[in-house]
Image (cartoon, rainbow, N blue to C red; front, top):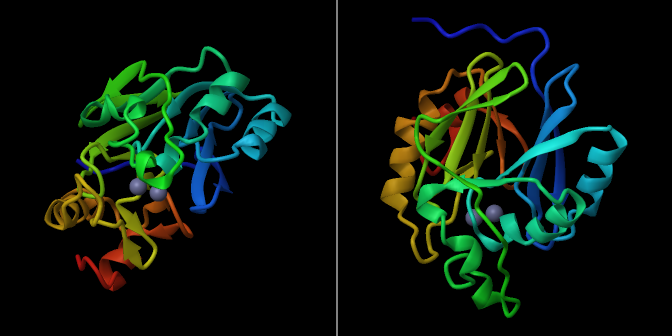
Length: 220
Ligand SMILES: [Zn+2]
Ligand SMILES: [Zn+2]
């Protein structure tokens, strides 16, 4: 079975780098469509909210790549702007939104909780946004419920804090495992086509092929 080649009108991705940890949050839409996803909601998400409104888009899900504080601190603000927006997260972090110790905010002096989730995700789920279809890959290690979203038609992936351009996610927090993260990267993320463009929770986008060859922490 061969993968489809990138289509001529791939999903559109806009990134917003928010808050004291410079966390990338994303708005994803499909050309010609009105629906969008918001991927992660960091501190002070107003620029993202304003942009969604100015584009006339309707958010249909807030998808969390994982529930560390810097990816969920803006969930309440996003829900205040878009009140019925469902929040989706991997099953392994179902309880993290409501638990400041699990989401690490307890250790920052500013405990954060958020409502939800409304849906839990597992490996193999297929999520549809307009004509695009995204596979959920469970990529734990940086956190137990970290996910990667991959769209085979466009070769676009969102990898959360598992993999960065030239680096990988931290594994010195509670619930982290370097061995597990290295396995997630080698066995799932690096298995994506070389020209896959990946968008991470911090830093610049990159391609899977480049990371596989040059990442100093996990070689392909
Ligand atoms: Zn994280
Ligand atoms: Zn992060």
